[in-house]
Image (cartoon, rainbow, N blue to C red; front, side, top):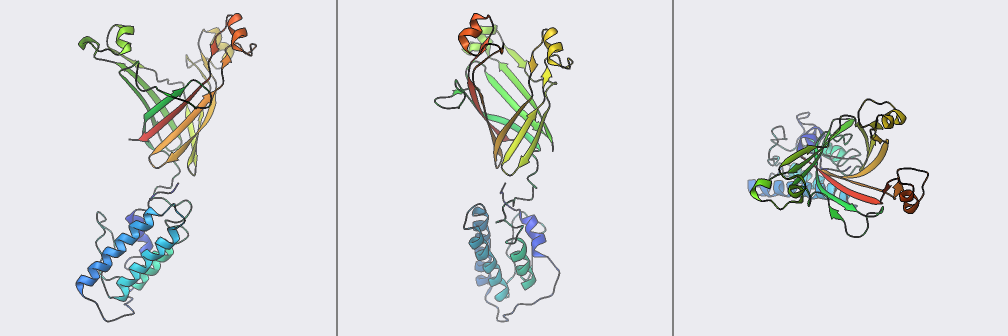
Length: 296
């Protein structure tokens, strides 16, 4: 996953304060010219960041190095890198520029396949909120989807709280404002305000991240969180949830899950809806959902 390398990381690439090298050109330019060269460097570095995922990244990075070299060649000081207390200051040196070329633009720099902003890209640590949730009445997520976050409930909050290896999911359904004459369907259904917590302590979600793809693996479990197998679970009149593996595409501070299933009968001996209903079982229709999570 490519993100921006922070100026803090650049500092180590510059190898600060390691040498007393002097400029190869002794005729210094005016302070105004040095200021202009500094502005050029900052602009070239921003351009290199913006091109970090493009084919032009190497060329943009080389331009940034050339702009830094101009500071050395003209005996200029480094410009001010905003909000970075440890950024290089004072006279720009050749060692600094060489370090920039080897680090900032090197094999582990911003143009590298797995470069990022200092995060090793190996986890989803943090809180992720569902900001879009579309449901489709087919298994391929085609056609017009229905917004699952709007409609029946006043508010639907779906959140995943992740550490370095696992996530816990919470689903809070809120029906509110009924006393003030809310027209939400939930008010008519329940006759008043209501908050339902659909989270389950039985669910365990592990994940692994590879590039821009995250794989979530969910355990199988019984609705009572105690029955160890499907037969015992159903004997206790509880629902058994099968283990599942789904993938999501990660882009910056969002990841998108797309998951669908063809219609099936609860009684697996029936292959179609008509036979399923004739056998007095329940047919679960085809569905597909696309959920976008954004990091809080």
